[in-house]
Image (cartoon, rainbow, N blue to C red):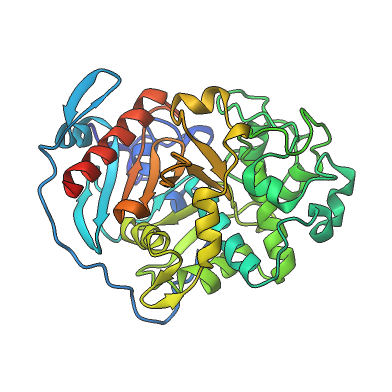
Length: 396
């Protein structure tokens, strides 16, 4: 897969300049997803001063493993060469089985995870719920009374955890006038070409006045729900999001490197998609979930919250285009549930980010990518077929 190396150090005379409005899109994302802090403002998620959680290795050959997706046959090696993958890590029965870096990525490189950030925030919510700081059944206005004048009036914390509020939010990534385009500008990722648009994320939330369906009626993917959740967490804990993630999750789990969030003009961290970390630290996050909320013998996330995330989703709220990838799936607590019967679940982000977690098989896989497309049903099904094939081979 062709690298974007000609675009690096774009300020150097003679090199192409990465366009401000397209820095996160192809072909530029092949470089920028590993250099986000060169493009937009960020805030640190400190790893703390404690020891690093070890990741024992038992590396095994995986390139020749065959798999099939949508009638197409291939191997894991071929998948890595053709899927715009930047990093792959496979974890099984306590050890790293495979760890690959491509497209100039290295073990110390921090990579944008897009909506995997939602699952980071969701896990933080689980920690604060377990501590009694947050009641998921409480109305959002209990924590954020300012939302009384918005379409979020009457919605609960659980509604935004599950993206089942009825608030109208157009998630169309390529439309210039969608709510998603406004979020790109409000978050500081893009310039505000319309001066009437909200200037930061909180103002965008306050501008949402319309319902498209009753609260709790169905799952509809709305990135802004995670930002609403982030503000609930920050208000309840009286602590900024990046500091909360550091204190409650990143440092306790023994991350090896600091992470970071992108921030908007008001300094708010982008909970819905602005998180950046190394491949190994994303793997530690997966391991934390595999171990039911413990890592290194230390309880970090309530076991009952993780069990409820895996098996407590309501599949009747999940349908339409979402079943093209997950026909037996659901969505719960900011995670995608692959199959409510098996309880395998995942964090996913546009342009090919994936953390796949299967406690039953003691198996996890992390894929960081820079696809040319925001979303692709074919690429997603292919990636899932690949990680399932590895799981099957390791379990045989």
